[in-house]
Length: 241
Image (tube, rainbow, N blue to C red):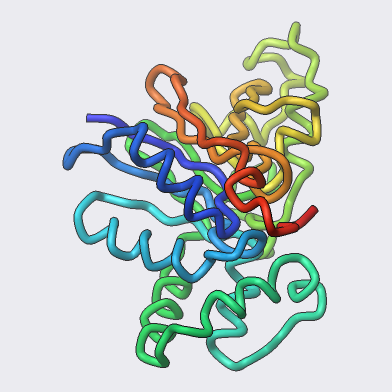
């Protein structure tokens, strides 16, 4: 029985399919998707449909990303956030052109039921971006922080590795959970094409929206598989580059 965490997808259906095939998913597995299913490559609606179908066969946990919020708002009331439009929203809207209103309603329900965060039985936290409350994610005052914050990852990156977890100066945010899994900030920003660890934080967004790949990692042993670089699977598209 495996728990597999899958990083940001950004409409890259071909890359997601590669990853799922490499995983050889079994009925007893749990898949935790870290958000940002849409915006970037041309198959956002198709990604969502695949995830809905997959969840009917395998236990899936779906985390909400900031791009998913924008898409949800558009599906619900036609709101086109200008920032969203230029950061993949246009491609996402186009991917829905052949979907019926009934299909869109099912997808809207999918977005509405995404989790802001998930804590498993081993006290491992999964969320799209981060949190700021020193008392833990459950005490976060602003819900949007969990899919927008980058300070958790920035803090973990600069943490002095010589400071033990029980030290007075160790960040209180990091003490609440055995491990923390995030996406949102591409590891390719740090010239790294694979998942990165800083303190007890694991970042599995490996830049699929840009020049990177989609990654899935087994959290028990940290073994991971990756798609091809997603931009190579869509050679006639610009993505979010």
